[in-house]
Length: 166
Image (cartoon, rainbow, N blue to C red; front, side):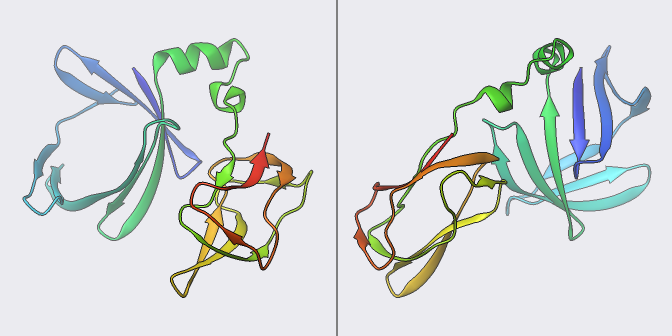
């Protein structure tokens, strides 16, 4: 059994029962075909849909799927995740926040955070200029800024730690 949460508010239970797929207890029989260009063609209840997998984050157990132009961010909880959650444990909050490193050599244009600041996934942290382009480095998870190592108007090498998180 899997628990799916779509766009942070719609929850679905997906089960396999003797070869049939049940979503919230209702049997569904989608016909899914992967096309050569990476797009999926889905037939469900007499309707045709086009789906594109845009992002897969195996660590966070998240997937972004665009269906007929509409983006759906889906988080997946497996039975062990549900068990730990029921016990009051949350693996995502227990995971160590990784430091933000320079993905390439460049010049730190602007530091957008300060130590002690809480940032959410997707928040901009640093603007790095590389190859005459501005690159916004964003938080990969909700965390607290432990230390800012980046100094504005300073060159950094690839892999240099810019922000330490906790």
